[in-house]
Length: 398
Image (cartoon, rainbow, N blue to C red):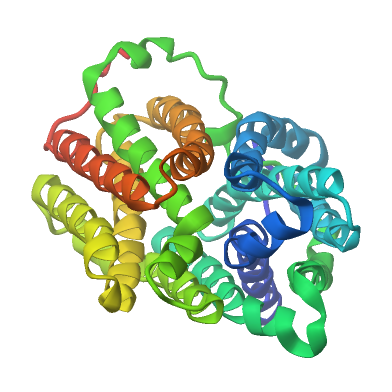
C-alpha cells in the first residue's frame, strides 16, 4: 500500500505543478545545448569528431546505467527527495563546465546524464500518482516545457557566448541558473517522502517479451527514432553551417528543431484516441522525416522548413512509440517490461548515433553520408512504426 497523500490546497497544487515544469526544464537543455557551441568546444580542446560526438553519447550511456538506480533511490528516499537529488546532480554537472578541462567536461556531462535519467524515470511516476486523471495533459505540459527551455537555450547560446566575449563555458554553465531556481521551487515538496507508483517498482519478470515480434517492432520504431533525433541534436548546427548558415542562425534553427519536437504533445494526444490504428500516421511521419533529411542536403536554402518539420516528426514518432507501449499491452507489468526493452535498445542506438555520425563525417569530410543515414533510419523507423501501429496486442501469456 502506498501512503495516502494529504489533500492539497489550490496554492500547494500550483506550486507542485510549477515544480514539475521546472524539473522538466532541466531534462533536455543541459545536454542539447552543447550542439550550437560544439565547434568552439572542438577548437578549445582539439577534439576529433567522434570525441565531440561522445559529449552527446555520454548522457545516453548514463541514462542506461542510472535509470535502474533511480527506482532504488525512490524506494529508499521517496520521490520528492530523489527528484531533488536529480536537480543537484544536474547543477553540479553544469557548474563543472566552468573548469577549463576536457576530462572535467566529460565527467560533468556524465553527471548531468545521471541526474536527467533520475528525472526521466521518476517524473512520470509522480504525475501518475498526483494527477491520475490528468496524465495526458500534465505529460504534454512537461514535454512542452522541456522543448521550450531547451529550444530557447540553443537559440540564445551563440549570442550569449559572444556577449562581452564571455565564451562557451560560461554560456553553457549559465543554465545552472534555471537549475537553481528549480531547486528553490521544489523545496516545499521535501517535507513529503512518498514512494513511487507500483508500475515502476514491480520487478521485470517478463523476459519472454524479447522473443515477441510486435515488441521488437515497437522497440525498433522508438530506437531508430532516438538514433535519428540524437544525431540531429549533436550535429544539426554543424550540418547547417556546412549548408551556408552562420553559427548564430544554426543555433536558432537547432532551437527551432527542439521547440517543434514538443508541439506534437499538444496535437497528437487528443488525436490518438480517435484512430482505429496508427499505421499510416507512423509511416507518413517517418516518410516526411526522410524527405526533410535529404532536403537539408539538397535544398539547404529552406533549412528552417526542414529543421522545424524534422523536429515535429521526431517528437510525434516518439509520442506515438510511447503510446504503443500502452495500446499493445494488457497490463502494467507487461507495459513496464516493454518499456524497459524499448529504453534499453533505444538508449543503445541513440548512444551509437552521434559518435558514428562524427566518424562518418571525418571519413568522408562531408555531412552528406550522415544525412543519407538519417533518411534511411527514418525510413526504417516508418516500417517498424507501421508494423507496431497495427490494431493488435501482445499475447496475454507474456
